[in-house]
Image (cartoon, rainbow, N blue to C red; front, side, top):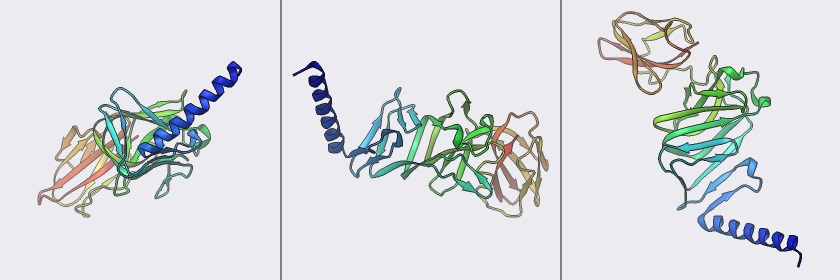
Length: 251
């Protein structure tokens, strides 16, 4: 038998053993690796060690601590953009059939220029979808050379979908935690000030997406002109302890 035939036979046996091992563990990858449909059966799991990463068809998961994806769960990639109101994401969305809970570390989202839907690369932000179907925007790092958007989560976050959209037209411009409809803010997005309208406003507190308070006021406006571009949470409280939180986009 020639050296080439021996190597080819070894490769075939190796692939057969590899598929058998994955099947035994209850883990299946789609036949075409680039499509990256990952299936973890019930009772099985995939562990990603701290300091390592795994790429699911262009979504790189690099946990700060060992992260476990438990079954049953299917991770897939769609070429259909996510839509919220009149805003659209890029034409690439990663979804999991079960919630990926309490993740810390870095997510790196890859895209093709043909998937941008006329969104300027420099304005791309990461979007993750929670279990209640709401989207949250994270102003990460855009690498226009390698076509990636990445963000490091220092605090645990749970999500079931990941995509990217424009900072000027995110999927998350809706109010969150609507506890008192009598309180409203405008304009949103804004380039400098946000005005607060409501009865007997006690205070307004501005938080970044890491939960850190960056501003507070007892006035009916808050100045964001000295803040960098990004997404913030504005919590407005009235003197009767009613409150409402808004997701504010600073251009």
